[in-house]
Amino acid sequence: MIKATVFRSAQRVFDCQIEGQSEIVMATAKGNLLKGSDSVVVGDEVLLTQEESDEYFIEEVIERKSVIWRQIKRENKKKVTAANVDLLVILAAVSKPKYKRGIVDRYLIRSAQWDIPAILIFNKMDDFKEGSIDLSFEANRLKDLGVKCFEISAKYPDYSPAYLDAGLSELSLELAGKNSIFLGQSGVGKSSLISALSEGSVDLKTKNIGKAGKGTHTTTWSEMIDVGKFKMIDSPGIRSFSIDDILEADFDYLFPDLAEYFTRCEFTNCQHDKTAQGCYFNSLQEQSHRDLVMSRLESYIKLRDEVQSTPDWKKDSK
Image (cartoon, rainbow, N blue to C red; front, side):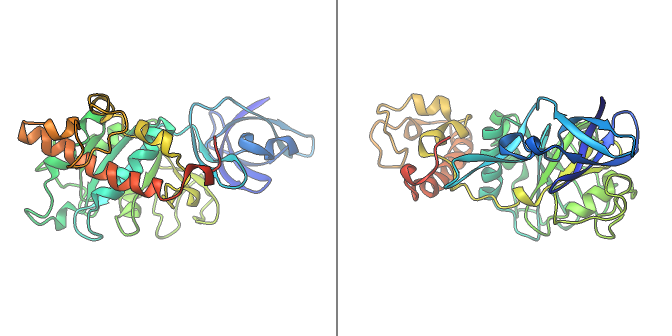
């Protein structure tokens, strides 16, 4: 059999790159591979057979290292949209659109749920206004999660970092050899960043994406794009980041950096607000540390309230 990677999904027919080659072939998935969580998705490593007619068929999906998924209500199943992702790349702008800490924390919930590490990129530093965002604080509040942060200007690739230790060259090294998914609001500069990282060889705006998509970029189907040093997955299925499928009972585990603090509260049902008796968070003394922790707790409470707005019994269990 022939080993390949799925680069683009479209119903039963998939664009696959044969291992060790640049060639992209179209392969039809066998019927049993189009059902349930084992349905073929972008990023899957698969085994192909080639018929005498030169047609390719996907015979088997190799065991996945990771999956991007969400719970589908009423159907009681997981919908997998991408596989074998090594890194979630959260892209934020420091000017327009306005940086929103809550959106970053929303993405990090999925990072914890999918057990896929994340990094955070601050883009548009050429338009940064002193005092608008405390970049050091935003980076430090995520250190306990192991989230690396980078400051760049995709518009001016020669920009040197002034507030953090890592810029575009360090980002390029971080992405090298990995399959990444880029997350962020519309307008944060994903297309410009991809162009900068590929030194102009990949341009999403002009639909020049090279070998992987055969010259056409579309948001209709999920697809993998070969940027050269790394690969990225573009998937419309993960752009909506509502968290209404998450069970309340599972929510605390999705803030692993706060887990130790939760166990120190006097009562197991502590709501962690300012009036809660015996809440460990209210006893934190050292101011700089307290500010970092409380910024994460603030997001936790807002997002927990969103999850609690739909009772668990109305959600499909996992």
